[in-house]
Image 1: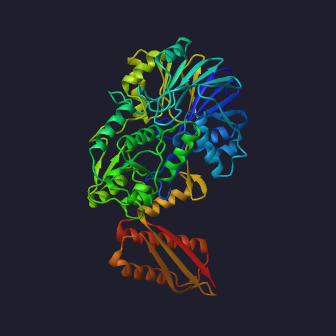
Image 2: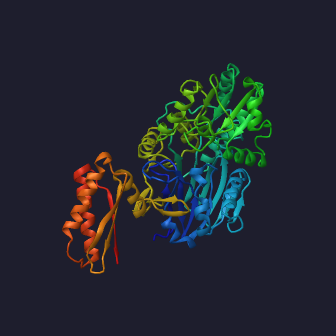
Image 3: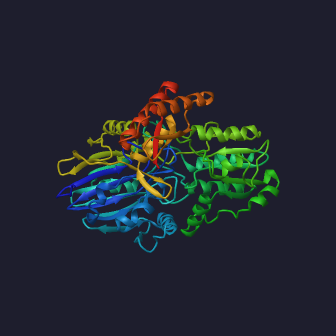
Length: 546
């Protein structure tokens, strides 16, 4: 366990050398604060898993030194793990109103709303936690109340960007101006901890205002039904789509519970005030096709989301030949197959699809190189610490920052304890980090026994063997074998006969050591399966004594 001394430390437990699951710790004078507590979604490496969480063992062991958790904004990769850890960590949460509304709903879903202290900080507000001072600075992003944090410590100021971009027409909220950010830099910034996601983009991310104009142009020229799918959390895009529906003369239908929650939370906090009234699914089907626009979840290929159910004809909303689906979102790497499956289903119906590759109907919420260069110029940090990216993104931002005149950078990954001051930046040591997964109602290690066995079963199949012993300890009758996922097909009967014969011929005498017998049978069955199939299935042996 490392306890901060008279120094300023930075330690990422998630979100460095990966995109998603952001958890950052700052430490000084014996205390820690956490910035963000996010999760990520599963991938094929975790069969049967939907949600992946950070392993917080490092800070759990010294939770008495943790002063609180400060949230930059409301995306799942920044707040999604709160319901799983907030009760155990037992520290107060701090967020601006919109983000706090999303967190409150999460706490209510798990019955923790009365057990976790949630402090609502006004937009652009400030507060202190022990030796740390925090000030929220609004920046443009793809969700309302995206914020940077100006963190004041006895050893220097930190500018923690959170997720951000530059946008002259942000649609929702008013981001800090270049003059305000320059004033922040004038006070002296020790380190800027910065989003690396789009560092390879040579162009700026683009404006939400441009998206509005392009969506308006596209929708105005379409006949029949129009369905637009986007990220449910992108409240700025919801504002844009509401304006498009009104100004194109179309009534609006919203399909997806997460969209309903986002609209509700937005209105509660003063956003989407002019969002048009929506119609029901049944009414949407009875409105003339050229007078309705639908906003639906599911643009990343989620089978159970609204678009997936519409494509599979299991939703009240139906699309037919000549209708259009607009993908106003970026295709997240890893989702290509799932998205392609839904797009093929839609194409089979004669539905025409438009993505951001055909039309400029989506902009990222993360900064490209020109935006990074501008922020460096305004903030003028002594040290640049790249986060929120894979290794290639973070390494590239470190190189780019040096090119732009930032004096020092440091590449760190999850678990690296970085001293920022004094005499920084310097990696002091490596702490263990890792991943947990939500499996049903249980949280387990991502690299533990359960998932390792599940992967092996998924790749190689499984054979269950049950053997009965008579009162004298001899093999009784024919063993029972069950195969799951073992590629034998028409050879299965011959394979089973071989196993039966090997067991009954090898073990004619009373069995002495049951454990040794079980292991011998397990290895024999596995070797035989490998000879027949080339696979190494999981083999489970059950011996039943009379």
